[in-house]
Image 1: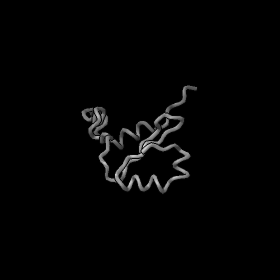
Image 2: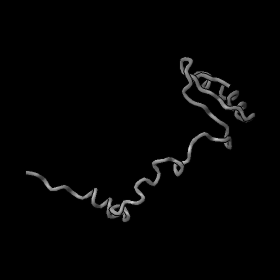
Image 3: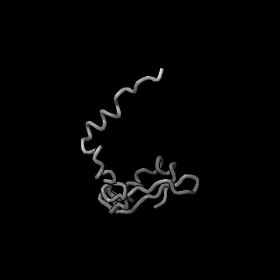
Image 4: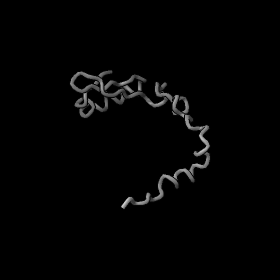
Length: 82
């Protein structure tokens, strides 16, 4: 089902019934897709964070083994150059 923002306001009952039937609702603004609402439990195309190529890229850095110490080092005050 396709719906505009105005449809979302005025025909929410119809949109909910479409979601209950398992349909995805595509939201449009000026004819362009801005979002897709899927029923709960529908298969998602979102990649989990652990599956992203950047996840764990600093795993082997020795200076980041102790996260607390690394954060303390980042947060400590810098000496003034005055």
